[in-house]
Length: 305
Image (cartoon, rainbow, N blue to C red; front, side):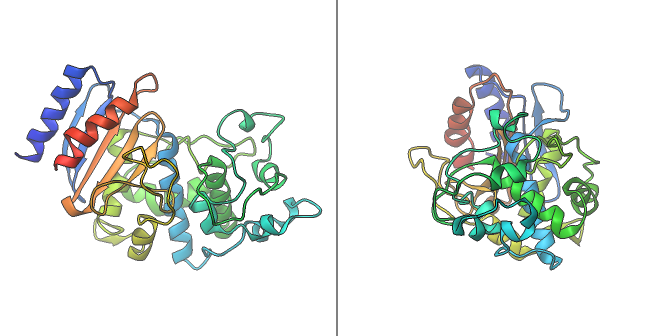
């Protein structure tokens, strides 16, 4: 069965089962091979899929020599530290933020604590004021705050905004324009979410990684970063979920040979299948049931390729 036939079969299955999907697409490293849109293909919030874009900026800054995985958060923001910072706070490294092992021990800057009076207006000062409850680098605990802090470290390292840095080094190269991107109250792009791209635009990141960091003959990301960011760095904490099988540097692992994904809330997924030479992307609405979509993707498409 050809790829197009498999994709068309999945579209029919989605319609038959009433799965809430806005669009699905497939591509190799250069070419969009298939796309079907149940709604208009237009920019929308890709939520935590943004984290994989932020991690790409980290890789670029490391390649530039401006940043290192063992740089500490405290060394970048000494002016925001509490009067008597703990050893745990002082020891949080960039690699701990990328693997969601900061040690803060909770999901921060994801919901109410992004509002005025708690995390706002200064997200960095807010996080540095919190107790570090666990030894950094030990346990996975998903938290958008870790991604936001990593993004702020990039900005300090390169001397410009995260959005401008990525525009110059990535968005403009991929033909993505200058995406709308939610900012914190101080005007910094939120490294953990809030970027707006269409389905076929945002899956280009997966195509870039599938190609080992090269786009139209130009190296945008070091191949070594592609390998490290997308391999298992830390075990995650829900083995009963077939898709919850480990985390890299802001990429999730997938249960197919060498596979990984960029993953945003409600079903903004770009799955990279290196052994198949494919990127499969799906976009779903906020009011759907992505657990049903995920099960169908796993059983009826991705595991069958």
